[in-house]
Image (cartoon, rainbow, N blue to C red):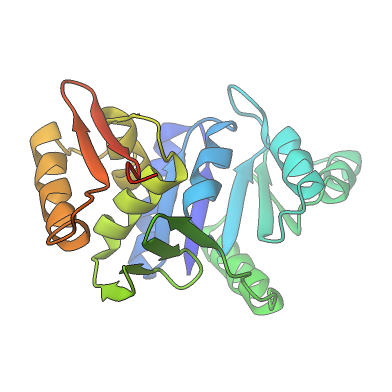
Length: 226
């Protein structure tokens, strides 16, 4: 299971991330509502956990916006608001479930399991085609000039992020935050090493390299053959 947690309480966020990962659940954690959209663009999540009150855009607003955009993933609203009217408001905004703080982790875990059991929708095929590079985001496969490119999970995330921003420079700090998370201790040198390996796999023996370094800023993916 893969979960996106949107929670601005850093103590609670760290605890939930730790507890979920102990259950072999992969967790990405953001602290502002408007960050949710960026993460959903580059990864699929089985459940989105939304805190109602957050800086930036609040969880209720995010939920309403996602449902208007036909987002089909499961959403669990997490909040201290416990009146009946609040619960009705949360559920009618598009949330699939509603959990009031404080709560026991066992209950959160049980609700996540129930949501994933109920979520039987097919993940639509999502293809990015840039020149002769083909990225299938639904099954996480990559090919270049018809040849399968074997990437690690991190390499795929980096390539996918660059492809989503094709033609635009993506700063190093943005790549680190989106791929590893806001609390990761990853340096620019670490990122450069990952991109070096990614280039060897994607651009090696190809006349038209796609991944470009932008000195002092970051990286860009662009097809210069057109």
